[in-house]
Structures are given as structure tokens and as C-alpha cells.
Image (tube, rainbow, N blue to C red; front, side, top):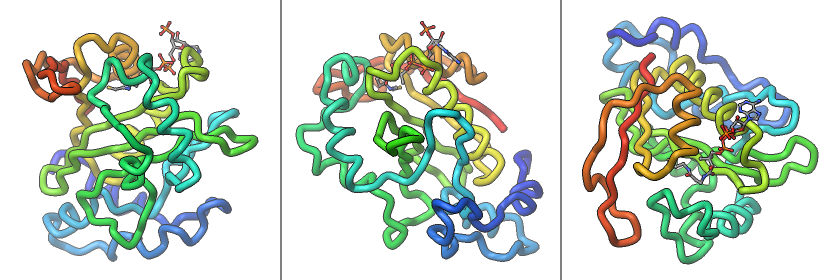
Length: 220
Ligand SMILES: CC(C)(COP(=O)(O)OP(=O)(O)OC[C@H]1O[C@@H](n2cnc3c(N)ncnc32)[C@H](O)[C@@H]1OP(=O)(O)O)[C@@H](O)C(=O)NCCC(=O)NCCS
């Protein structure tokens, strides 16, 4: 097992941050067992420690229902969705991303809110989908409201989640599929140390048209 199983066992601690205290207690990973396969299967994406932002202006926290309208408003701007496969037509479609411990399973997609530290207003989102507990892999995805582009926030949040996923969740391979026209996102991944693996032709539908995506990965 090449990735940090041992480290995972050491690092997983109960949530201590005042804001989130208690919220994830019930998701604490079971006591370490001798069989690594059991621990591997039970971890991704269950977690007891949140990715903790030390950014002076932005926190990372669970998605809440009050975030959805704001997210929908910027996600439906052409400048935001044009280089992605998003095609949302109502805010309700995004409700599945609201944090819900009751329905959480190891392979559940997980999206965090990036919110202003002062008034706690949604400024972006970041998280994982296509989570494979067996393979200890997941795909990262993110977006920002245009008014906070160009400040290094996506790079910061991506770096934060990559470190958290490798260290606290035990994810070995974090991948990112980027539409070939999405230059800004490619630059985020480059800055975070992702490696470009190649072009996946007609990999995903982009609002009815097959799109070519570059595949990037970050390995533990
Ligand atoms: C992809 C997306 C999140 C990137 O946003 P971004 O603002 O370009 O990325 P960052 O927040 O990391 O900011 C980086 C820029 O800020 C600049 N910057 C300023 N201060 C910085 C700092 N402290 N650290 C790093 N970069 C900084 C960088 O030079 C860079 O500018 P450049 O693009 O001109 O080189 C954004 O374009 C977006 O939401 N797009 C729509 C959704 C999307 O495409 N999602 C990804 C799907 S794969």
C-alpha cells in the first residue's frame, strides 16, 4: 500500500474547530484495525477533520442550503460555465450538494463552500466526486464567483484540499478532468503540482456536445 495508511491512522482526529465542533464526530473513522484492506475501504470519503483554511479572507466549510442560490446565480453565468460541463437549469439541482451526514457514504461526492471570513458569504465551491474507496482515488472540482478570480483563491483552496485528501482521507490519486479550452483551471492545477497525463477525447458531454478533456493527476 504505497499511500499513507499509517499516517492516516495517526492523523485522523476528532474535529476541534469551534465552528464545526461536533458536526463530524459521528463520522470518525473506526479504531484502526490490523487488516489494511478494511481500513482502506472504510475511509474515503469519510472524515472527522475538516480541511482548515488559514487564508486571511476565506474559510472552507460544509455547503449549506443558504449557499445554493448564490452558487446557482454565478454558475449560470456564461463566463463561469462555458469551459465546464455544468448545465444547471434550476437551483434545486444543486441541493444534492448540501452537506448531509445522514445520507453520507464513503463514495458520496463532497462539496465544500469557500466563504468570506467576515460575513460568511459563498464565494466559491470545491470538492470531490467520482470517489472510489477501493482505488483510493477521487476527482477534484471547483469554481469561484467571477468577482474573486485573479487573487489566487482557487489555487489556495485546491492546494488545501489536495493536502487534506492525501493526509486525512488517504486518497492516493486525485484527478482533475479539464475541458481543453479551460486555460484558467489548467493554470490552477499546474500551480498545485498536478501532472498533465494526456487528452481524453470526447470524454464528457458538454451541454449536448462531446468534449475533449485534459486529464491531470496529483499522487500522494
Ligand atoms: C477555474 C477558476 C476557479 C480559476 O480561477 P482563477 O482566479 O483564475 O484562479 P486563482 O484563484 O488560483 O487565481 C490565479 C490568478 O490570480 C493571480 N494571483 C494573485 N495573487 C495570487 C496568489 N497569492 N497566489 C496565486 N495566484 C495569485 C495569479 O497570478 C493568477 O492570475 P493569472 O491567471 O492571470 O495567471 C475560475 O476561472 C472559475 O471559477 N472558472 C469557472 C469554473 C471552472 O472552470 N472550474 C474548473 C472546472 S475544471
